[in-house]
Image (cartoon, rainbow, N blue to C red):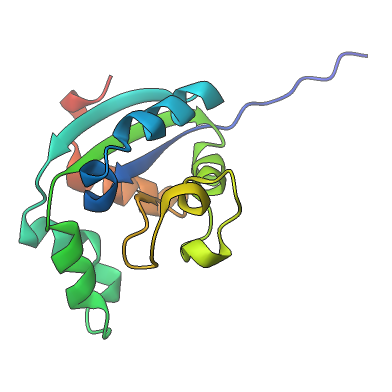
Length: 145
Protein backbone atom coordinates (compact mmCIF):
# COMPACT_ATOMS: atom_id res chain seq x y z
CA UNK A 1 0.00 0.00 0.00
CA UNK A 2 1.27 3.48 -0.91
CA UNK A 3 0.93 6.17 1.73
CA UNK A 4 0.66 9.74 0.51
CA UNK A 5 2.10 12.55 2.51
CA UNK A 6 0.09 15.74 2.24
CA UNK A 7 2.24 18.86 2.27
CA UNK A 8 1.03 21.81 4.30
CA UNK A 9 2.36 24.51 1.99
CA UNK A 10 2.08 27.83 3.80
CA UNK A 11 3.16 31.41 3.51
CA UNK A 12 4.36 33.40 6.47
CA UNK A 13 5.60 36.87 7.18
CA UNK A 14 9.25 37.13 8.19
CA UNK A 15 11.24 40.23 9.01
CA UNK A 16 14.84 41.07 9.77
CA UNK A 17 14.49 43.80 12.38
CA UNK A 18 16.57 47.02 12.52
CA UNK A 19 19.22 45.44 14.75
CA UNK A 20 19.69 42.56 12.30
CA UNK A 21 19.98 44.91 9.33
CA UNK A 22 22.38 47.21 11.19
CA UNK A 23 24.58 44.28 12.22
CA UNK A 24 24.77 42.92 8.65
CA UNK A 25 22.83 39.72 9.36
CA UNK A 26 20.40 39.87 6.41
CA UNK A 27 22.57 37.54 4.30
CA UNK A 28 22.82 35.00 7.13
CA UNK A 29 19.04 35.02 7.65
CA UNK A 30 18.45 34.56 3.91
CA UNK A 31 21.07 31.82 3.73
CA UNK A 32 19.39 29.88 6.51
CA UNK A 33 15.92 30.30 5.01
CA UNK A 34 17.04 29.11 1.59
CA UNK A 35 19.18 26.31 3.04
CA UNK A 36 16.07 25.05 4.86
CA UNK A 37 14.28 24.90 1.50
CA UNK A 38 11.98 27.89 1.84
CA UNK A 39 11.09 30.02 -1.16
CA UNK A 40 11.13 33.79 -0.76
CA UNK A 41 8.10 35.04 -2.70
CA UNK A 42 8.32 38.69 -1.63
CA UNK A 43 11.06 40.82 -0.15
CA UNK A 44 11.81 44.50 0.37
CA UNK A 45 14.15 46.71 2.33
CA UNK A 46 12.04 49.41 3.92
CA UNK A 47 11.75 51.97 6.66
CA UNK A 48 8.47 51.21 8.46
CA UNK A 49 6.27 54.29 8.94
CA UNK A 50 4.96 54.81 12.48
CA UNK A 51 1.32 54.20 11.46
CA UNK A 52 2.27 50.88 9.86
CA UNK A 53 4.23 49.86 12.97
CA UNK A 54 1.23 50.71 15.16
CA UNK A 55 -1.00 48.58 12.93
CA UNK A 56 1.51 45.72 12.96
CA UNK A 57 1.71 45.72 16.78
CA UNK A 58 -1.98 46.63 17.24
CA UNK A 59 -2.72 43.70 19.56
CA UNK A 60 -0.24 45.20 22.04
CA UNK A 61 -1.76 48.71 22.04
CA UNK A 62 -2.29 49.86 25.63
CA UNK A 63 0.39 47.56 27.04
CA UNK A 64 3.43 49.12 28.75
CA UNK A 65 5.85 47.87 26.07
CA UNK A 66 3.83 49.06 23.04
CA UNK A 67 5.69 52.35 22.59
CA UNK A 68 9.04 50.61 22.84
CA UNK A 69 8.06 48.10 20.15
CA UNK A 70 6.93 50.83 17.78
CA UNK A 71 9.99 53.01 18.46
CA UNK A 72 12.40 50.14 17.89
CA UNK A 73 10.83 48.78 14.70
CA UNK A 74 10.80 52.29 13.17
CA UNK A 75 14.37 53.09 14.30
CA UNK A 76 16.02 51.82 11.12
CA UNK A 77 15.42 49.83 7.96
CA UNK A 78 14.01 46.30 8.05
CA UNK A 79 13.87 43.53 5.48
CA UNK A 80 10.25 42.43 5.09
CA UNK A 81 9.67 39.03 3.49
CA UNK A 82 7.01 36.54 2.57
CA UNK A 83 8.35 33.03 2.89
CA UNK A 84 6.68 29.95 1.43
CA UNK A 85 7.23 26.32 2.29
CA UNK A 86 5.96 23.25 4.05
CA UNK A 87 4.74 24.23 7.53
CA UNK A 88 6.44 27.60 7.02
CA UNK A 89 4.94 29.26 10.11
CA UNK A 90 6.08 26.65 12.65
CA UNK A 91 9.38 25.95 10.91
CA UNK A 92 10.34 29.65 10.67
CA UNK A 93 9.49 30.11 14.35
CA UNK A 94 11.75 27.15 15.23
CA UNK A 95 14.55 28.70 13.17
CA UNK A 96 14.11 32.03 14.99
CA UNK A 97 14.30 30.56 18.48
CA UNK A 98 12.70 31.80 21.69
CA UNK A 99 11.77 35.49 21.86
CA UNK A 100 14.13 36.01 24.77
CA UNK A 101 17.64 35.25 23.49
CA UNK A 102 18.73 33.85 26.88
CA UNK A 103 16.11 31.10 26.32
CA UNK A 104 16.91 30.57 22.63
CA UNK A 105 18.77 27.40 21.70
CA UNK A 106 22.15 27.55 20.00
CA UNK A 107 21.69 27.11 16.27
CA UNK A 108 18.64 29.36 16.18
CA UNK A 109 18.95 32.90 14.87
CA UNK A 110 18.20 34.44 18.24
CA UNK A 111 20.35 31.94 20.09
CA UNK A 112 23.28 32.68 17.81
CA UNK A 113 22.92 36.44 17.26
CA UNK A 114 20.35 38.24 19.42
CA UNK A 115 21.53 40.40 22.29
CA UNK A 116 18.35 41.25 24.22
CA UNK A 117 14.64 40.49 24.27
CA UNK A 118 14.04 43.99 22.87
CA UNK A 119 16.52 43.61 20.00
CA UNK A 120 16.14 40.02 18.88
CA UNK A 121 17.05 40.16 15.16
CA UNK A 122 13.95 38.68 13.51
CA UNK A 123 10.16 38.49 13.59
CA UNK A 124 7.78 35.81 12.36
CA UNK A 125 4.03 35.35 12.33
CA UNK A 126 2.71 32.98 14.99
CA UNK A 127 -0.41 31.60 13.27
CA UNK A 128 -2.04 31.41 9.82
CA UNK A 129 -4.39 34.31 10.63
CA UNK A 130 -1.51 36.45 11.86
CA UNK A 131 0.55 35.61 8.77
CA UNK A 132 -2.29 36.65 6.48
CA UNK A 133 -2.80 39.91 8.39
CA UNK A 134 0.90 40.78 8.53
CA UNK A 135 1.53 39.93 4.87
CA UNK A 136 -1.36 42.25 4.01
CA UNK A 137 0.15 45.08 6.06
CA UNK A 138 3.52 44.96 4.32
CA UNK A 139 2.79 43.63 0.82
CA UNK A 140 0.28 44.24 -1.95
CA UNK A 141 -0.84 41.04 -3.73
CA UNK A 142 0.95 42.11 -6.92
CA UNK A 143 4.26 42.33 -5.01
CA UNK A 144 4.26 38.57 -4.37
CA UNK A 145 5.48 35.99 -6.84
